[in-house]
Image 1 (tube, rainbow, N blue to C red):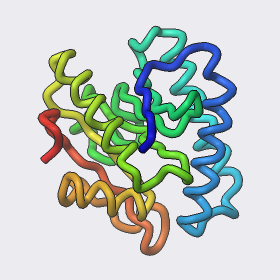
Image 2: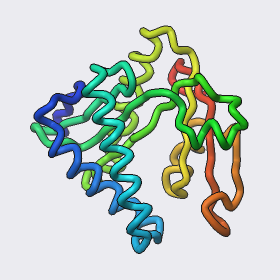
Image 3: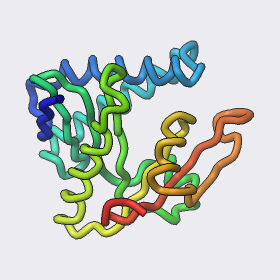
Image 4: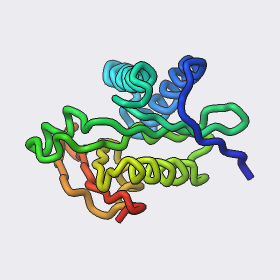
Length: 180
């Protein structure tokens, strides 16, 4: 049984989180069969670092992260903030002004153990306490899309072949009552 601590990031977590992002994103790209797209991989890592910086410098006002730790090892992350430019563009600004939940990452050695579910449940409570009733979530990764479809049903927006032939982008609208 894992002893999981859920908490906000601290300044001393920065290096560990940067390494965690790199590990999870490289693993994801490899499992998606796009591990050779090094420029996109680095862009994805840098965007997560920027989100973390936004959290730490705004004390959670711009981006708000939660970490899952097992014996002081970072094994998962989740965050929320303003809907991304990609979501706004892909929805013709229908979700502009919405909150987006993202960076739902679980270390490859801990996937399938309920860490993502635990992080999501904690995020629901935080959003509910802030009076947020609905958020959006998106993914361009087929493996993650399958997880979100099981959890939330079909996406509100399906952008076929957005990332190339057979590689879709999906966007969900989710009620904060624990999902649909």
